Amino acid sequence: ARPGQTEKYQPISTLATIRHLEAEGFNLHGVQVTGTRKVERQGFQRHVIRMRAPGTVAKVGDAIPEVLAINSFDGTSAWVLMPGMLRLACLNGLMVGMPWATIRVRHAGDVLPRVADGMRLVASMFDRIAERVQVYQRTMMTEDAARDFAERTHALRWPDATLAPVTPHKLLIARRADDADDTLWNVYNRAQEHLITGGQAGTRVINGRIRRSTTRGVHSIGENVRINRALFTLADTFADAA
Image (cartoon, rainbow, N blue to C red):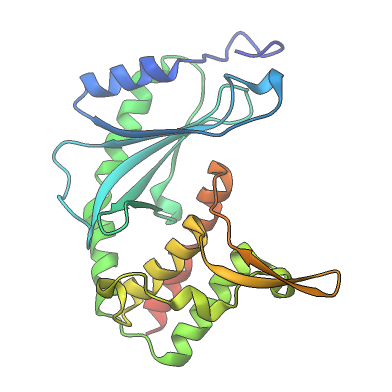
């Protein structure tokens, strides 16, 4: 733990957490650590563990369900456990933004068993999430609805549209044929992939001159979570309005 934290704070190493969860039947499928330039934060920065739970649904749409455990050791946050999905088409990770689908475990007491219990509880939500995804897959988007979705999605990343390197319309472009259908699920996934992975060519006006630019991917775990959760909530709103 960092200096200044109370004795109640119980930092558990990520490796110990992974080993405990694997002993409980979870399978590790990825770890991401946020980079930092501050020496005092090195070793304490936010990280996310992606694991798959035994006995859950095999797929949610065209994605594999995962349980995400997000944590840091700087005393500023608890463990945040939430459902996610890995799309096989692009290996891009989604995060489910339902308020009921997030569990927090404080760094106090016997942490590891409570993290494991929380992850099992998150895993039990996948049937309910799969039902929502099926609704997204059945919901056809009109041109106006897709444009509205793109504009609201665009604002999540670039609140000031005049500073964005790409227009909202570019978020609707399919990178692969399987994503071309205008279902809510496809529109949502196209927009999410463009926002999170970046790589779209565009232009920006800098000092009165038009400059070529390329959208950057989102590498911050906190920003990734914020955008993903907002996108899932937005998709749910469109599904309910259809």
